[in-house]
Amino acid sequence: MSAVQIRRALLSVSDKTGIVALAEALARQGVELVSTGGTAQALRDAGLAVRDVSDLTGFPEMMDGRVKTLHPMVHGGLLAVRDDPAHMAAMAEHGIGAIDLVVVNLYPFEATVAKGAARDEIIENIDIGGPSMVRSAAKNHAHVAIVTDPADYALVAGGTTTLADRIRLAAKAYAHTAAYDAAIANWFAWNDAYTHPLGADALGATPFTPVMPIAFTRKETLRYGENPHQMAALYVGQAVGAGGIARAEQVQGKELSYNNYNDADAAFGLISEFRDGPPTVVIVKHANPCGVASAPTLVEAYRAALACDSVSAFGGIIAVNRPLDGETAAAMTEIFTEVVVAPGADAEARAIFAQKKNLRLLIAGTLPDPARAGFTLKTITGGLLVQSRDNGMLSEAMLKVVSKRAPTPQELADCRFAWTVAKHVKSNAIVYARGGATAGIGAGQMNRLESARIAAWKAKDAADKAGWPAPRTIGSAVASDAFFPFADGLLAAIEAGATAVIQPGGSIRDDEVIAAADAAGVAMIFTGMRHFQH
Image 1: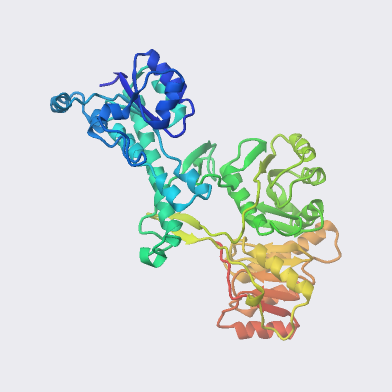
Image 2: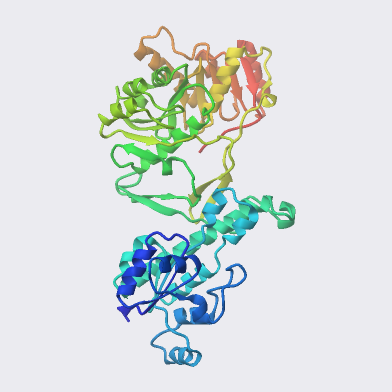
């Protein structure tokens, strides 16, 4: 059975966008309109004739609206197979009329959670009848059309539906209810369990549920993935009001690529570490920072970050922790930059960037708290790895001076700065910093010694290009994302000019490493925390 003429439609929506116009179009085709509660009232206010569901079922809405469509007169009209004689006989025997179209969108559960509603209000916004009707209609898509998205109203407004459209609408409907149920399940598992009146222990609460419901909505299809032969798309999470790179406002520039999104997110994560700090600029290339600096002004911070590795910065991603001003924007356009991420941008900055049509400007709004909770996910063959976010933050109590010499206040500040950056560098990570700016960054090597050497070499190369008398590693602090397993990595850093070291500690050769630091008069701090990022 392909084309179906709509004779009766059941309309019950939380989001009433476009519902009156659709109902008017259906009414012009002679379709009987059946509705509930607020939707019925909205249609009557528009002058349309509407039959209440309670008239159809013979039962009034009851229990504060919890029970209204859960009835054989509704679900029999949705589920009956129209070319099955037994089904048709049952309909005739019980006086059940066929329903050819269901238009439903569900109670705003996510929006209710997002606004910080009390638990009882959240529970009341778990829709029961709506998903039941959606699933019944979708199952019987051979005969019934189900519409869950106002964007699809035009498909049914003409009064008939095709099988191809009904199949597509059914698939979309099941995805809709799956996402809705996932949001509810995740709320119970990761939010409500910790505030439930019975307590987390009584619920057996754990951060990792036995089943992880995941639902994302496709925002856009990308030109390609990491390489042109790979397909790619961007999906956004369910959380209402969520921020981040995926939801940032693109002010200008060509379409973002898969790699642009990946690198911009890396820059956004690192700049968020400095959201409450002085003006700071992060430059990222291939998901690794190649320059980070804090300064009294944003333009000074940019120039200091660029000086760390101006070669890698070409075609990079820039993130800032302050609204972008014209002077900084002008400096940024002196070299080719792919993407700039900022909490905001003034009119002068926007006008300057507008002259660079390929440069993308993303306005991300408020930077997130780096200490926030959450999870990261990574696909592996046949499964998914899930872990809590690396939101570990250093406290004064965690800092343990293990060398004979304690760091100076400036060395301590540089240690903390380098440590913050190292957290966002692919392991093995070595970061030299001096005066609130990175001096050299070594990322992603198979051993820590090579990362230390590469970072020092980059610092020397930067000094040669800038005409400085010496690289900025002289008198710098060096951070290692994990412990030095041997003294060789530390000795390479000392040879580069580092005078202070911050690292997790915990190696079986810690004594050898500490002895090497003491022999060179270098201050060393243990944190007891590592920051692997693979």
